[in-house]
Length: 354
Ligand SMILES: Nc1ncnc2c1ncn2[C@@H]1O[C@H](COP(=O)(O)OP(=O)(O)O)[C@@H](O)[C@H]1O
Ligand SMILES: [Mg+2]
Image (cartoon, rainbow, N blue to C red):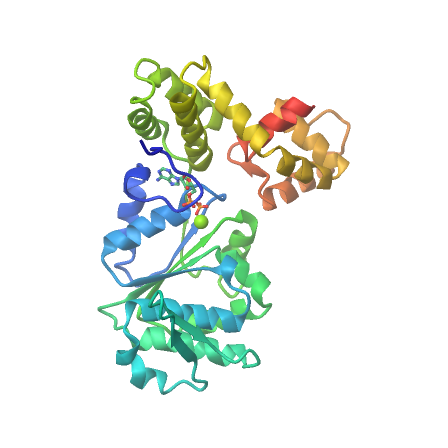
């Protein structure tokens, strides 16, 4: 029997639950000529929900994860490579011939996949303009292309002028809907909400929340009932209490609980066994992370892990606040109506150690 839970990659089909309204909204939204910006902490399900929506829209679409882009030249090459996957290159020949720098295109004989490269010393801006122009010219107002740029905040790291260049390219386009996703809340809001940023008010801002408990519970029950026929309701509730409905950690814990149920069916407390397993498996990483935190951060993380107050007078409020902001930016802490540790298993490790 295959594990009915999945975590770590984009989930679709039987591993994907709920998000009905969000999928419908995105599908509807791309029928307008506008652009969408989707923000949430990492592993909330942005990439998955957008993948599902663009597929459902039935429109031509390409997706690029900006985390994997190493330079402006690489950006142009990867964009073209994705584009050639949905458009046979032969039909674009007349458009490619207008390029100021002609890319080298080769086919991998084994996989049939197309690869695109440019001379490394080329002027990145020219390549980028030409690549984006091709996307625009191969489409029309009635047949708009959807371009998904995942982890969009990375553009600031790729090149300091990239945001300006991109914005000036994009504002001339009429045949593309952009969906821009990002996990770094503070950077994303700075890119789209700061008046001085070239992307100020570029598109509609949408925020993704954790999954609603009832839907997630039904999903867990379906996967767990085969292994825990009598206790699955209790187990599903305890999993969701522990992970607070976080999409990724819920699937991770459920997958491990299921595994315990299959392999060690005599275990009394499958949830505790699964938690111990996960915390132990990550022990080395957790320790390394811990060693890199300064004393203030360690103090804050310990207090958050144990649910203790931060207002003890030990540190100035401004010191705590700026440390929290930093921890949030780095993804260790998330804020919904209060600050909490992002990873419930790291939280467990900190509790065990302190
Ligand atoms: N709709 C969903 N239903 C069930 N699990 C989900 C859903 N969305 C996300 N997940 C879980 O969260 C993990 C991370 O999803 P992903 O789309 O990569 O998030 P993000 O792009 O926000 O980092 C997935 O591997 C899966 O385990
Ligand atoms: Mg993602």
